[in-house]
View: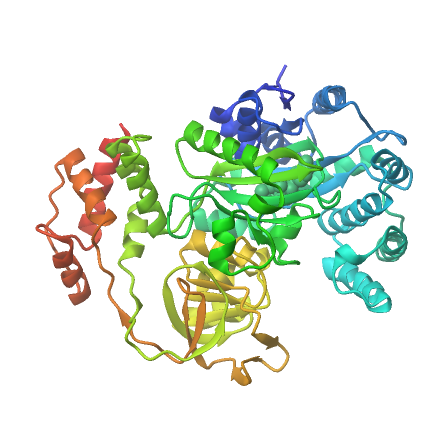
Length: 589
Ligand code: ADP
Ligand code: MG
């Protein structure tokens, strides 16, 4: 009989990190972390094979899946000591997609599943916190309606904004239990109006609705576009992870955050990341509230006043540092990590090899080899030729006059000049006719991916260093300034204003993603300097494959770059790509 379901949690797991093809990246790493004895909320993974079966059998599940999932759920109930759908002691779960290759923001996650009018009361009693219970319920209704029932997020936002206006509050954390109860009641009215039937109350219906939605999201336009862009075959399918919930929104000793074991932008070997107190996972990435730095050093560097995690919850921070160090040495690479603290207790929710800029990839590879974590050959194999290529791209001339029109966060390094565009489709259209554009958005969402890809650079008015815009821009190698709060966009008028000036769509701006600045007009650029880590890595590549690269430069920039690089020189033309590829292949063997 085919095994469609793999359990994890409670110190062991059916799968491990080597099983990414079957369990998806998220599922495989959750299993691995469980087996390492790290605190992972227990759950189970429905395999990618089940998704493949689903699509090759007229969108039906394998016959044995229901029974295997029920058994998986039972095991989780046993570990957690709660029962799914039980009115007095309810188990809640998240339903998370997870393909083989990480597809950030492509597939949708539903949190707090299992809540209904009865279990929310159970959760309120159990936690002794009615506000928390109804906050969780309203989040669940919003996410489930959005992901599974197809009701737009903004409709729920509107209802919530009405409540906030009426109450005269500006942030979600100011709403009381009674306030959230009323919001939930209005949400249910909204769903019934849109759907013609009430919000699903049966937890099992909710669960299978969410599983189908994850499978369906494998075929949505965003996912298809991302696959095309990254050469991911449709036939792989996605896994579904069903995992018991932990709550970062249980008050001031609870929090949620994301971390990188090294700086994904510069490669600096220092813990880096953000967290939010009294919040759930999505809040950090969504840019609803501005997150705080994890470390004291990070906070000081960013000039933040709110305490870092290191200062606000020193004890659990200490544990966290131990866990992330362990993860980095276990995986032997920089990790991108999600975690939640529930009433002072740490829970690990995800780890994966972190996406990084070219600069960071180079520094991390060289550092890890110097630290003795990986060999020099491996370091060579870790840096994509395309990443080296990126390092050949120009940066802003430090001596050029710059008129800063707005400041934000240095979300993805590099410089770019282009015409202001406010819309992803328009960005794509203009770039197709040869225009360089800068996409300027309040914040980006997965629907904007094609526009981000088409743009030379991205500016967002909201969002932090781990917002959608920042993460995707770094992955794509696009310069990005996020959270430029001085910019106020008027999409209808096709303008933005900043520091008292108004800029129209089509006007030229320049962004400095390394500094986090938006500049007026086109600013002079300079060619990159290829010394230090670049030279070190190329010397290692040379050692691996006796790589002899002649400076067969094709442009004056290449030629100078090549001379700057040293005796034999390198400007990554096609030939150099080939040589470097050979060295990498040799290194991998
Ligand atoms: P994505 O691929 O978009 O990151 P995830 O499945 O990782 O989606 O989840 C979205 C957010 O929800 C993340 O912040 C994650 O940490 C959080 N999350 C997922 N499952 C749970 C859970 N069981 N308990 C608490 N938070 C969760
Ligand atoms: Mg995630």
